[in-house]
Image 1 (cartoon, rainbow, N blue to C red):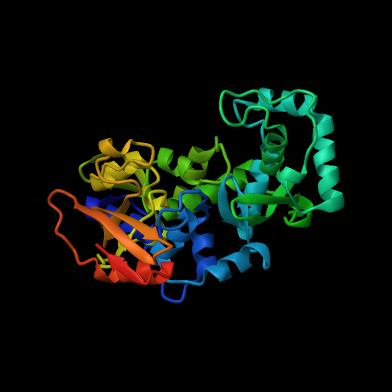
Image 2: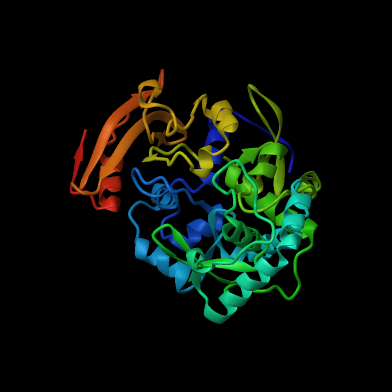
Length: 375
């Protein structure tokens, strides 16, 4: 397919369509996770957990119990790289697991620590094999060499070992008690590919998924989009191959410098829609802050750790997506004890037309189980 030229509004519509905002009629939880590729995990719970909000922005009200069933009973989803990911992508993640930590700059540090603590590794695996699944607090073993850090991980040796083994797929998160993770052996949970992907094959899948989710993007944006795993040194080669096959199309955006690539499945750009929803601060559409600012002229930063008097917009501000535009920010808080969804403030972007928020607020309140909304 010949190179194309897009206007900025067309590029925005491709980005929104690539993220399934909203999801196609009839799509469910598993469809969304398989399409987006990951639900980033974050402990912040001012409104709801991030992974729940990502699904809500695309589906509206859905059955959270079904999400839990898909995770812990059907095992169609699992946790990897601080995200909920689909088992259907396991072949890609397995490539990352095989390369961990050797593909990273900190490989010598981690390999040396794990080698010095071979006994700790054996003891953790042996206890999980005999007694698992278990929370980390029940795995109490001494390390031959403690983990040194200036942060909260200092001397948290069992936790560090579990994290490294998790990155390698040796252990998995097999359940949760609140935010406490329950661990088990990966061999009991994860599939194993009869013919594992080569790095080049995995990169090709990553590039196609990322390009589709982004709609239209630079090579650098495509490289950093796939949340779970990496790094991916062969992204450029994979892009060139997909362009030759017509799956990606060279694209230029009027008024924006740089070479970009659009996924052929999304072309031509869809018409503008009037759907309005709110986005988690960690939503994949806006995770790349530089891209968000370039596409939408929308400067967005988390203010969770900013002292209250210095906050510009609020503690947990959610961007307001209307069609293909980011038109404002809303600062909601769910008072679970009172059953009230409180709206602390709404800030409209300069030059943006205010849009009605009653319907998305009612959808959010219904999802949260709030009895009322107070503005």
